[in-house]
Structures are given as C-alpha cells and as structure tokens.
Amino acid sequence: MTGMRAALDHAPRVAVAVSGGVDSLTLLAFATRHHGDVRAFHAESAAVPPEATARTRDLASALGVELVLLDVGELRDTRYASNPLDRCYICKSHLYRGIAASPAARGAVVLSGTNRDDLGDFRPGLRAADEHGVRHPFVEAGLGKAEVRELARALGLGALAELPAQPCLASRVETGIAIDAALLRAIDDVERRARAHLGEGAVVRCRVRAGRAELELEESSVQGVLLPALLTALHGAALEIERIVPYRRGSAFLRVVD
Image (cartoon, rainbow, N blue to C red; front, side, top):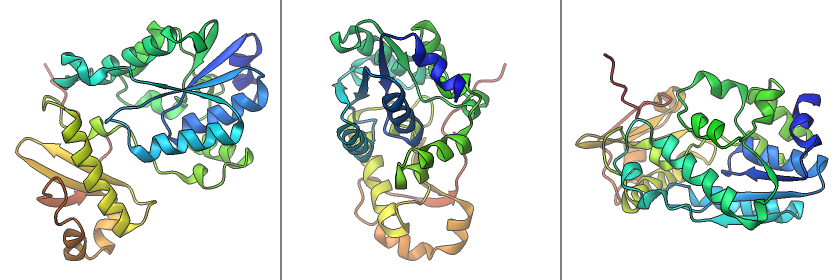
C-alpha cells in the first residue's frame, strides 16, 4: 500500500470526500488508520441517497472521525439543474469549493475515492478534482474496484465491502431533462421499493427519460424475478414505471456526436 500512503505521508491534515459508497468509505477507514488528523466531508443533498448519508455517519462515528456535513447548493445552480452533459463537473466543483471553504479543511490535502476502473468511464467530475488539486490514492496505487473491496475486507468493514455501486440519484436522469429535489426524491422512492422486493444488494436504477420512467435491473434479476409481482410492489410509487429493462451502466448520459 505504498502508493496509498504517498498521499498521506506529507499531509499535515487529510480531508476525505465521502459519498457513502464503498470506495470513499474504504478510503476514510484507510486514512484514519494511517494518519493522525483526518476529517470526513459529506454533501447532504436530494441527489444523495439517504442511506448513503446514514452509512457515512455510522462509519465516521465508529472510526472516531469528525464528520463535516455540507450543503454545497448544487440544486440551486441553474446550470446543474438543467442537467447538461457536464453536470458532474458542476456538482464536484461545488463540492470541492465547499470543502475548501470549511475551516475544518484548512491546510488539508483533499482525497477522493476514485479508483483505477473509474478512469475508463465518462467522469466529468475528474476535471473538477484536477482543478482543485484533489488526490486519488486508489488511482495512485493502481487499485481497481475489486482491489478496493479486498482492502475494505482487510480493514474489517464487513458488509460495506459488498455494497453495490450506487452513484448519485441525478445520474438516473437523461441528459437535458431538468432536475429538482422532488424528482430525485421520486427516483429514490422507486428504487427503495424495488430493493425492498428484490433484496438490498440488488442493482436497481430508476431511469427518467423523455416522457417515461424505466426500471433497470441486472439481467439475471430481469430473468429471475416475477415481473408482475415487482410491478405490484412499485404500485403507488412517486413515479410510474412503464417498463423493466436490463441494466446498462451510465445509460442516462446522452452524448452529442459531431
């Protein structure tokens, strides 16, 4: 883990941006074990699933780490709310500015849980990280998702090591469709109902597209679940699901090709 520690060795203070997913939670646990002055920063927002905030609170408390909760105001930014292709850049810019403005982060090196596998995805937020001098210890150490999960197990994080990927709720909305808090809460309502029926470990995405809402499930779930029973479980949800389709990572992004 020499590469991981390189981001910590000469930092007087460490600020970990924690989303509540397995990557950032594992990074927080690692940093706490190997550095004496660590603080966690988490953005509370309608775009963040409530259980992600709860996980962040629980782990910070268990580790004895100060947790700074931020309202970075991305939903009040009309650029973000219009849901452009670089929405993630706008959001992460708000986050990193919010961390930098916090007295608790004064003099700190800011770390993110980005891993090596993320570099192959469409991630506009990485540009914001570069602009704010954020370091990515997993990338520096060459760790991908599987290795991060192994590290989480080695750190004794238990069930957190097996968390399915769960990006922000805004990622469910097709590019160009406006985002607001009510829509994000409706998406969360659908996904909670689906997971209650399928199991908390199920990969579930409520996609909002032009004129309709779809539920994406892993192909094994689509084939194995009784779809009428699932649709019954979703009855009364804040969004009406028109169809259930196989999960496609990042399928809400629409890119313009010249």
